[in-house]
Amino acid sequence: MITDVFFDLDHTLWDFDTNSTLAFKKIFNKAHPSININEFISIYLPINTALWKLYQVNKISNEELRYRRLKESFDGLNYAISDAEINQLAIDYIAFLPENNLLFDGAIEILDYLSKKYKLHIITNGFAEVQTKKIVNSNIASYFITVTNSEMSGVKKPNPIIFDHAVKIANTSKEKSIMIGDCIDSDVNGALNYGMDAVFFNPYNAKVESHIKQVSHLLELKKHL
Image (tube, rainbow, N blue to C red):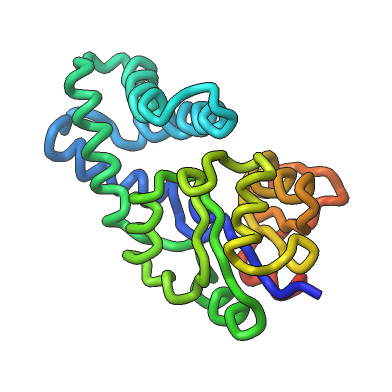
């Protein structure tokens, strides 16, 4: 019997890619108007994803992530920019990112639906201060009883310690809990390896093993919960 539902935030409820693009548009319009935003984003997104995977397993630091995802993107764009400018852009990006708070289609409706039946929580690897702003500014804070981030637990998903930390502060058990997230490695396999059920949010229809529960739209969670 499931009593507690744990959500990832970025790419699951909060539309990271769209909000990120809007933040970069604001920055570049002011400081680097010659940059083609669509070309930059096409280079940036896979670089950011690859570096986040390294960050999740502690192979790079917070500071390296913030610098390298910009440096490598500008290099890919063949755009000349100084380290001082990159460091300032990294600061501006983190500041502007929570100002845009588009959610995935169906997010509010599914939270309304689930909150009447379950206790809802968040487990996120994102930076604590930024994640809090996203949750508050997108008007979803009231749905969640607890929010666990990697800075609180000292480790990141898929480490079982963060799931255990989240379950304990939620005052529940892994047998009564389910994790919903967009990342097979950190969200789904992390939860399953810990002993918690999981559903893969898969809006782009990535191929996954047949035993993985998945939905392509958030409202499809009604079939599982």
